[in-house]
Length: 402
Image 1 (cartoon, one colour):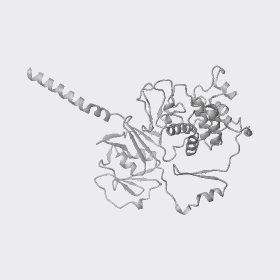
Image 2: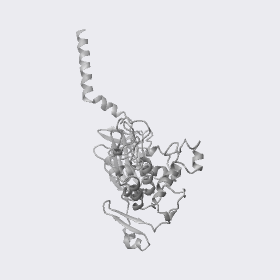
Image 3: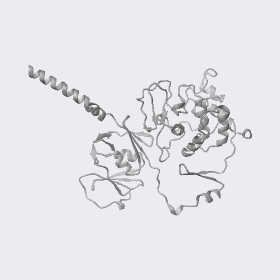
Image 4: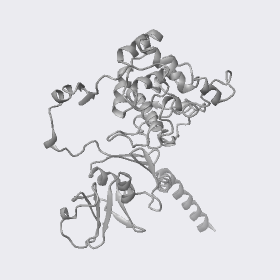
């Protein structure tokens, strides 16, 4: 009897030691499903679920590679995975070799050598260490340990054919285009010949496109409505150019959402959240799924409403990304990281025009005290989307465009 009591006591002591060591939590974490986001889109790994091995995230090579638009082939004779940015792969670039003990990975004829954790084949799927493999292919890789998310983005660098290079400024200025150099971000900005003046009451304006209102016009309107507001005009115009989104009208939408940056609703100025992202009326728990968004730049705080962004620039870019999701089905521009935690929730391309945002971006998208239905408000040109143009954007334009 004493022996049994001693064994029970010893077992309990052992359990307490294990609990204190964090082993149980580690084991629980190992079983947590890992999500994969490729260029802002969540991809389904099927039966090839990612897992953790020796502190390395192991992911299905084919699923992520094909999600990046790459061609993937299996060379069974030589035990090699052949990945190519062209189709079909140029096998002449590959060295001759026999079947080895370990799987080899080649990208455009160049061997990718993972770190100390080697690729393994599980259920006929090649699983590779995430960071070393895809960074070796020139991709940007992030691991979000808090939400167990793999984030892979295509690189900015593209092949350059130097035989086609031309002198930038003289060539494009000779075509009546405006050429600017952004020394801060090392970017060339080429703007097409001046566009026709905007026509008021033309509601068929696309979300995608070049800005028409100038920085000076938008700043004058901002000064008129709130002289103490932060000056985000240049950020909106610049970020709009990078995504092909109308940054001038996006700025006007932010003015509507924030009440000219006076706020007063659930979102606070310190959140750098200018379009109400994740402000649903329900306070956050700080455990919200970021859905692939960069956890270093966006977060949720318990008891607060909506997403918090680390800087005004991140907040503006997340706003532009959300518009991009509504307006187009294209992937994020090359090299861009996901900042919008609701990007993948949008039905891509469902709102190509600003007036299409009513009832989608904003619900119900009209004043129920004035109209009995959305259709009635739409016929009266008085929905959420109409308001962005009528009450904000067109007020920035000079009288000559009326």
